[in-house]
Image 1: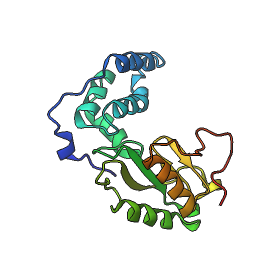
Image 2: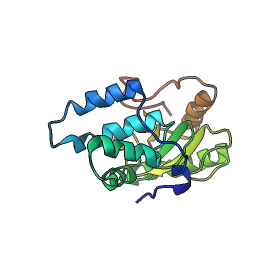
Image 3: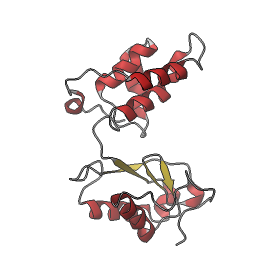
Image 4: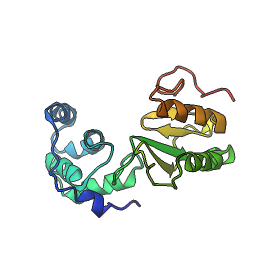
Amino acid sequence: MKTIDSKSCDDNSKFSFNTANRETAESILSRYPEGWKISAVLPLLHLAQKQNGGWLSKDAMEHVAVILNVHPMRVYEVASFYTMFHLSSVGKHVVQICRTASCWLNGAGQLTELCKKKFDINLNETSSNGLFTIQEVECLGACRNAPVVQINDDYYENLDGRSLEKVLDQIVADFVPDYSTNNSNKSSGFNK
């Protein structure tokens, strides 16, 4: 289980949704019946994380708890369980490499090493330019096209070192990468 980084949480600012996100939060909450608003915890945490620069501060999680009218621990439990939520500051691009069986057997370990070397950081660290954070995560649910890497909200499948390096270089150059499964009808990534 992840722990909340207390240093990162002490940012001396109270979090609250901006006007646009407050309206989005109200829209999200309207989808759930009375007595079941806690079910909106995932989309509200996602909204808070997006507004907060890619991570959830303690204040952001407490704001979500107030909106849901629940004890903050209920929100912390959810945020600390899912790898999509970051409890300390992360880079602009979070590179999550699947480490479960099919990805590992198809080269995910080499992809992790490539990223560590390319950005001169270890797992769960952020590059000196603030662009990349590297993480290994449990199953990303695309085993058929292993190995899989998720960068922010996009999946990249059937990767090898060359194809992942191409994606990362495009991101560094501020280009949208050629391929992700979120913006293509293809069922697999780069051709090896």
